[in-house]
Image 1 (cartoon, rainbow, N blue to C red):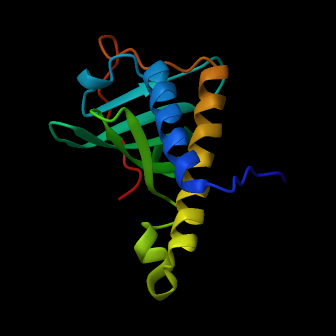
Image 2 (cartoon, rainbow, N blue to C red):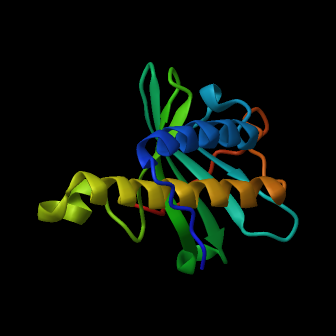
Image 3 (tube, rainbow, N blue to C red):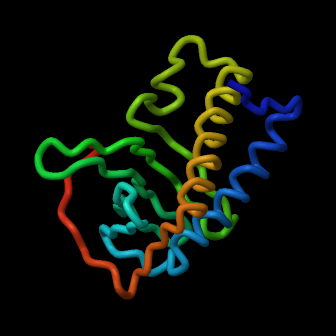
Length: 154
């Protein structure tokens, strides 16, 4: 499987995070007015859920996931925790259900190169996933969304 791996990852990671912000805005046009939970659907596709974890003046922390099946045996995957920098217009993946926060994952082996590679992998995945969601016409309409109770993540 091909994965883009640029030589100047620091620069391209910042570009990727800014691009992901623009894609997230396409997915959630009213990002600033996001309720605690919301759901988007696309024809015959798994529901896309978003949960607001924290709202600060310049940042939002969110969890974004698909819901496969329903009821108590629902599978929520992938489940990404995101930090949205409203002032910088960028989105950064903090963790997913498979990989913990960067310093927890790398612990003693947290060299700058390993940290950058780890962050690049998570944010590149987000870029591809957001592309998938937009191609399949998922959209969160905050003014029309229903608040839901669901239990994914932690």
